[in-house]
Amino acid sequence: MTMSVPKRQHAVNAEAQAPSRTPAGDAFTALISQVVQLIRLFTVAGEALAKPAGQTLARWLVLETIDPAPATVAQIARTMHLARQSVQRLADVLVRDGFAVFEDNPAHRRAKLLRPTPRGRAALRAIQAAQVAWSDRLGAELGMAELQQASAALERVLQALRDPAFSPESRQRRGRA
Image (cartoon, rainbow, N blue to C red):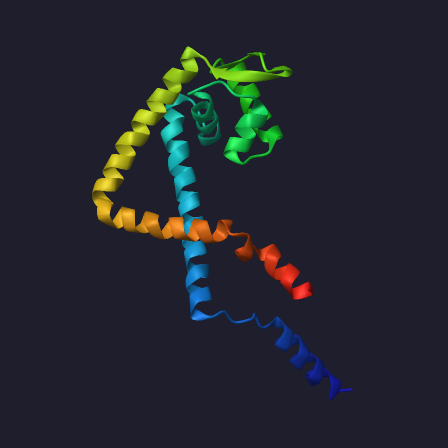
């Protein structure tokens, strides 16, 4: 009986080891980690920029989406890559607080258009002004050349991720075939 315990423990330890990545895979994973940290920091910054105007980041983004032209909740959700239900909740809050209104949609009887009110546009302009000052300050600190280089690298990553050949599902399908 004591003989089987070490063998089992060895099997458990062997299974617990994570598969190793290539150096390029490690570099990509490090980039993902940095992007996740950026998302968190951008979210905190966005909330701070929106707060003086009485908004949240999510409400700001909805107002910005409907600023050039009114849109249905479904259109806003598609544009923002969000669930329609979450956008509906945000739209309802914006309407309740007087930052937006629903209006008739000539293209659809039931799907109303969401439009910012003058109060909503004023809040949006205040947030945009704060964002411009923040971006200009950070841009000056980091430098245009470095930011353009980082942007070009991220665009390359985005293009690769949009390629169906690189989706996690395509590797799983190839493994089964």
